[in-house]
Image 1 (cartoon, helix red, strand yellow):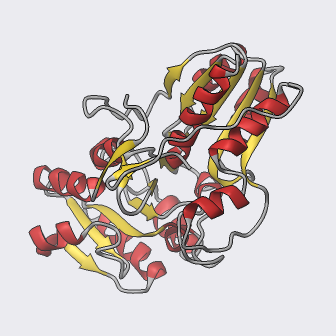
Image 2: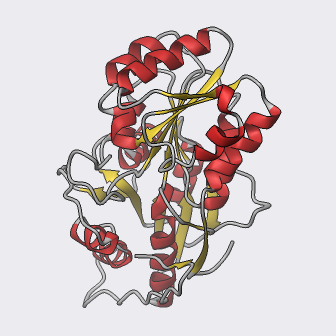
Image 3: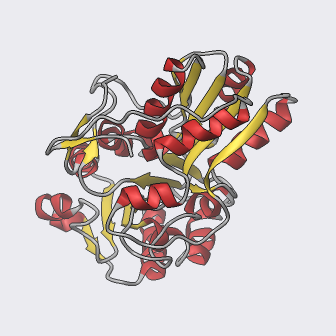
Length: 334
């Protein structure tokens, strides 16, 4: 695993999907009028006979994907997260979910990673997809996992929803680290606080862990790439080693990772306190500056440090998170 600031890669998912499609003739690609933005211009250029431009008609695109899956294809469907879930939800349930078809729905720009306003911020997409019976929900953290995710989910039974960051993506893991859909990744262990995160919050969580460790609060970091079905055993084990648990997600605290962790801890009879770090039951505005949104909605590295400090009842001001400056082509935690 690398240290911040992280190098970045462009179109890691697009290259991974194309490599998979060259090996698997049943893979087809659908785009909802966001071909370049979802990195599938690579697929369109290389394999045009297996590419479908569905236009700005996401509900129709989901119905098409279901029909293709019934004919033996494995459709990968691409648009922004909010348009991949909220807009065509009825078609996902009835044309894909109910018949348990192998459609892979790829939602870019999760949470508050879009410059758009409330209509474009996918802050409830995991909650919606977790509610669909049989749906697997994946939230990858970096460019390495993004490059691997198409091959990892291609043979998963039933439908899959994947959240992906748009644009240059940090490289946190080593290329040899495999994306495991069955087990969460235990990245460090400590007995004071357990930070459980998914998706693009991992760099901020690792930076927060560095700050907390330096302040004498030994920290566990558990990266959860699959929110459903959750690796509940790893979550419960991480909680058992710590005094307090924080779930950290770029999503509403209602229905996402925090809810999944709460369910796992409650069902296991864990006595650990859980603090959910995420958007607090609110709509999200847009901004050109991601750091502004992360700070406004309590998703910054400092917000994670502050939440852990308060949860453990430490006196005095929390330690200040020291974030490395990023040069061109690098990514530092927000």
